[in-house]
Length: 256
Image 1 (cartoon, rainbow, N blue to C red):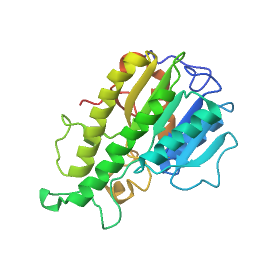
Image 2: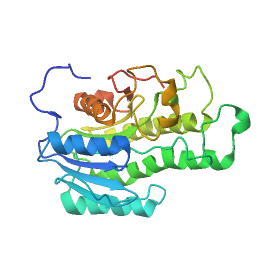
Image 3: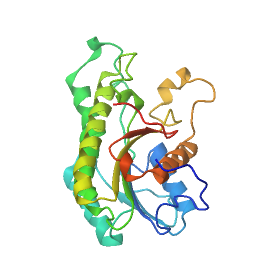
Image 4: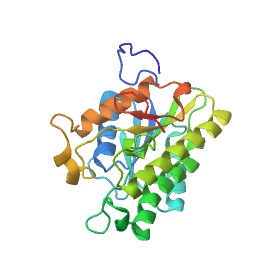
């Protein structure tokens, strides 16, 4: 990564009028990313994608719908972006599934494994972002730095797994990390200035982490805006040598 020198402008390694797509803009982190980018970069244009149309967004954001489990919906979203504003400086896939009421919960034991939960979590956490990459990577700028980033998780690190459990979520994020690495190799051949990374946001105060916040040490639960600022700072400091890696919110590299 580049040296952590002070910048007079937020996201200074990108054009002031940067063009951004956020997939999952209705979630805690996705919404915070949208608001921070729009506030700190008034000339930016943010395409805010979610399952339902957003009713309250900044003036320089465009709300549009997308269904992550429907490739036709993803392809249509990419087409709309390009027709409206052209090439992209940044794509954030800020989606993720860990639990869904009593139907899907993190497994504490192999005895809790079931095919339906495994398939659903992998569709959302791995297949969805992969298909976003399929249709959005060709829209990345070629004459300037551009970044494709997916929210990953430290628990997707095979080397760092010392507690076990959470089979489906761990596996889906480990698979996503491999997708990111493989995408980065192919991307480097067609767009030498583009960067593809995974980002671990830490434990953030969102609906995804809410059932498990009691286990978080005091002071370690991040608010969505703070988390988004740290993630965007990591993105701002990225160079092409970082492509294919998974970064934590503090800028450290997470082992595969």
